[in-house]
Image (tube, one colour):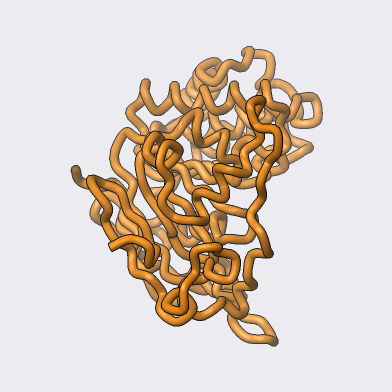
Length: 316
């Protein structure tokens, strides 16, 4: 199966007076057509920076020293800005982290959606307005919502406005960064079901970033576990939850609260600083299975079975 997106050895660094913060430091992954790929991990592991690198949204003092981001056969990191602008929104859309705060508070939401459609297509205002209201309806919003200002909408409604704007031109890939953050559990479920419906109806590929493993379990086809700027494990959602391989993945799943659990077991220790990653396996200071090898040699990504990958010295 040919990937729609292929990320190879992507690195995103931020310059500081103390040196480079290596927020993403050699991440590689693939996304296939018509799937929901989730990216999970603790806060600070590089998830959001990874998708910003994929979308080429990194601004100074950030920079991308190496890597390839091949989307539908085109390396996004190498094309001119004007060509990238033609791809955005029409083929590659983004629902940013804190999307509820991405709306202009003094402009009606319909006008903001219309502006985005006109700016990235050849539609006139009348057709753009029709499309905007059609997409509002598609994501479960009433027509009168378009005439409201952002402060008149709930958090879930604002999130749906952003999603409707992102998918209006039917992109083949939508990247959503923490789309359920700060929403209550009922609204979270509605947003997750909305992404699943859009994927099935329009055959979109969705990449969803979240630290919430329970949210991934509801929506994902495959999941990539990220730790300390790199991908630690990749597999189908069922294989990851039923038989996690990497000790870090096991720790994330064991930390999910549930009715049947008397205690929730967290991962000991703290995530390392991107200014000074540990040598060898970056998880070894927190891993109960760590050996002398783990402290010296960074484990390569190995394929364990069909479409199951893990970077750990315990395997292979």
